[in-house]
Amino acid sequence: MKRARKITAVEQAAAIYVHFFLLQAVEQLLLRSEAEKIYWHQYLAEYYQYYCTDPSYTFKDLPYHMYKGGLWKQMIQYYRTDQRSIVCPPFNKQKYLNLIRCERHTPDMMNLSRPVRLCQMCALKPGLASPLSVSTKTTCIICGTWIVSHPSMETVGRVCIRHCGRFGPTSDQCFYCERLIHGAGAMSTPGLLCQHCSFGNNANRCARLLESDSGV
Ligand SMILES: [Zn+2]
Ligand SMILES: [Zn+2]
Ligand SMILES: [Zn+2]
Image 1: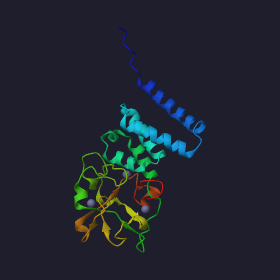
Image 2: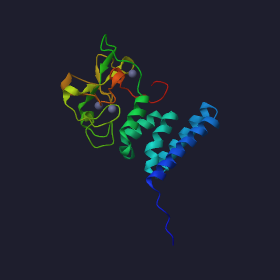
Image 3: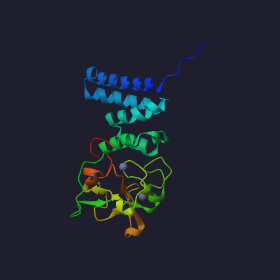
Image 4: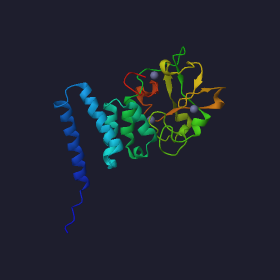
């Protein structure tokens, strides 16, 4: 029996390229209303998340449909906890997560923001910012990239007044479990940003990821 020819990497890339442009054409020509577009993005996100068995499509197309379909909470969970997201190119992960990041600036004055702190439990626990088994205190609080840098090179993230949490800007609240952190610095660890997530304007931008486009 004649064996089917193996698809080359170039052919696979071409198929993904065509798929992407077909998708754009369908979006522009056939789907008229916003609600209709959102419905199909959510439908495709469900397909890629639960039924698609080809990881090369899943890591590329799933975040796109989650973002466009407003499934931001699920996208955060996917990048933070789903082992399949480990192979995602870091620039893609950083792009989508920074798109859903709070836009507010965090001036270091008059209690208008505060630095991000992690409680000791969350700092040591793996799996809060990334599915990699590294302790959370060494990963970027936005994209989960493992940070291996000298302390003097590190950028500590900040949260805006709206995202300071229920204890306000003058108390420390853990970025992940949201518990009040008692005592001074020794009881907590700073929440760090990687070079990409602290580049340019991102350095002074709130570090809270939004779970929906309503700004929550
Ligand atoms: Zn980052
Ligand atoms: Zn904010
Ligand atoms: Zn915590």
